[in-house]
Image (spheres, rainbow, N blue to C red):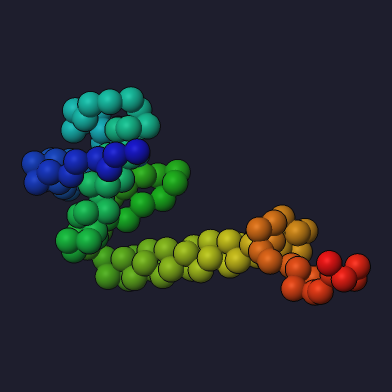
Length: 126
């Protein structure tokens, strides 16, 4: 899957729309206002890439699943948002680790790992 092309114009358009918005905007609405091409999911993926680029560049874009994206100047809100994302990331890593451990316990994770008995001499002397 190709990464969306994030341009300076798209980033500027996104920031203009978010600055002018009276309330949070979902990715689909941002995509329509930015006139992004592609299917709905492609548009949303493109918006997420633009938002990631803007955040990496210092823009304080906060998001919720239900509400959407918005810009904030509130230091407390921004800090709370970042801490929430950090907690979410830790939960994902913990869940991934737990699933790997369960997979190993069921034997599914060791299908191609050498078995301990593989190095034992044959009992029939062969």
